[in-house]
Length: 184
Image (tube, rainbow, N blue to C red; front, side, top):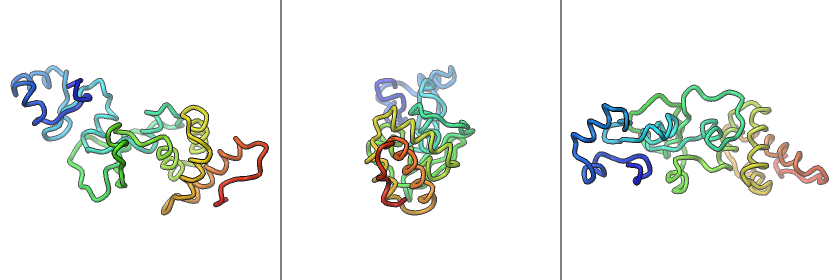
């Protein structure tokens, strides 16, 4: 299963192991049954296993934690974004969100650094969101232009807070410039 990225469907495993061997691995705790016909290795951790169980991606503060960004309060349940208009299969306890998910995010089971910052900026209190944005700018190679464009392109709930966070994070990095987001 490690060669398959740490997770696999029962159909994928049938060609590799017998049903008895799979059941034995589940009973020993070497493999976890995540959802009907979906299995994963415990080494992936509970958050990634939840994302796999729902066939989604880690998002919001769960993604920030996975990227090593600071969060004041670690989420009690993992935040998982499921592709829009998809009914998720039943899985572990999680905070579910529905939105488009890119192929790269699906492959990584994790939202991109930019999307993580923007998602957090929409829902977290200003100071917490600013800490996430500032850390992403300084440690993950997120550029000021990417953050500005991403915040400016947002629509819907939480946009004003996300724009404010982006403007303030950019302003702090542009000490000698008066230019900020066009939306400020």
